[in-house]
Amino acid sequence: MSIHYISGNDPTAVKQIAEQFGFCLVRGLFTRAEAEALENQLAAEHRARGGRLPDLYSVPSLRPLMTDTRVLGLAHALMGDDLVYYRQTNLLYEATPGDNTHKPFTDFHCDARGTPLNVHEPMQSPFEKIYPAWRFATYFRDYQNHSGGLKLAVGSHLIRYDGMRIYNDVNEVRKLEKGTVRIGNVDVEKIRQPSFELFNVPSQPGDVVIFNLRTFHSAGAVRFSARPALALLPHVERQLQISPIGAQVCAPTPPGCRNAIFFDFAKPSLDADLYIKWCALRVSTNADMLTQFSNDPSSEFQIRNDSLIVAFTLHLDAQLAARGIDTGAGNPLPPDLAAHARTLLALGRSHREFSPHHALLDAAAIAALAGQNDNRALAEVMRSVKARFAAASADLARLRERAPPQALKPMAAPAVA
Image 1 (cartoon, rainbow, N blue to C red):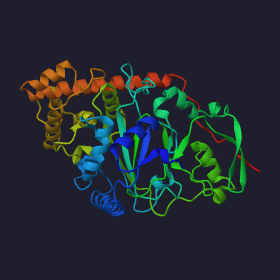
Image 2 (image 1 turned 90 degrees about the vertical axis):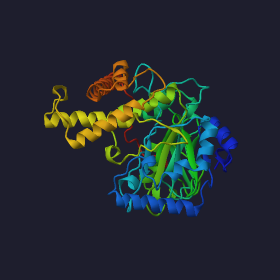
Image 3 (image 1 turned 135 degrees about the vertical axis):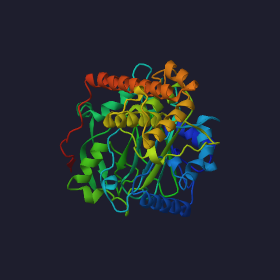
Image 4 (image 1 turned 60 degrees about the vertical axis):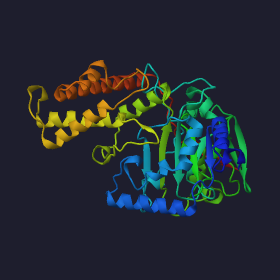
């Protein structure tokens, strides 16, 4: 288990490790007691809100996690004085083990998206360039001694996307040289390994994992009892886990549920702007953000509300169509839609982007927002956002026209000597 990827709360060391390898495990940033209290608060919010949670910033009792000076100190070390938060968070909670625990997302992937030509295109930045967005994750279970944690590809944040995506292509994986791996007293043959190193993060409650959004990763890593530092490609680990020797060589998942909290920060920049817009223009949107989001100002970082602007626009458009309301005819909006319209206009008037590419609000919408006629402003904002959403859908269709890599299919089980 390499110590090269692990640090304490030392911003200089964390920056050095994260920029070199694409991630850093920060040991004990929070105490075990703090971690336990945080999970208890997450459980309480989950119960109080019926299991439907908005973004992290919009939950006052959980917000201190991201505004804690220990976290912000690391974020500033990685990204400088100016930080942007764009509501990209995940509050994973289950009271009893369910799909989140038993079916984690094990596909090998990276999150960075968006180019000037196509908002859905994977980012292909130069090798020497550090992508300006990082994810912070804290897990509430022990993954140092158990399976189920995070897997990362060391240094993959400096490898072009096309050089990594092949490991989700069964035909490309079959080209890798086969080898024999000894796990305890068992020799497992026909194991295919890539040339780069894989790392199963040995996080424990209170730790924080920071990884670059260009770093390839997957959930549900398998830890091998007799070789805890061994990490294999995700689908190879899954095959071993379900094979006849799985119970013998694979550590079990920890007791309890796979509960965790994730949140992103970025440095205001072109690449961050493209990713923020991709997040907003995806089809999936957390509908709870419409009623539960907090627009409290932040003194610690800038907040981008692209996802809210798109969500409110699409919701209003659908509701107007369903109720047969023609705003162009001067018809007043029902109280609930009028409130949403006011929120959308307020979000539009405070909206700022970092690049002109894939703009949510075009020149006409911005001009209308600067005027006094709210009806015209609302019409222009909705027109502009819907046009951008349609363009993004066309971008996605064009991307899908290209031949995607063949999805991984079950391969022959590894042979046991």
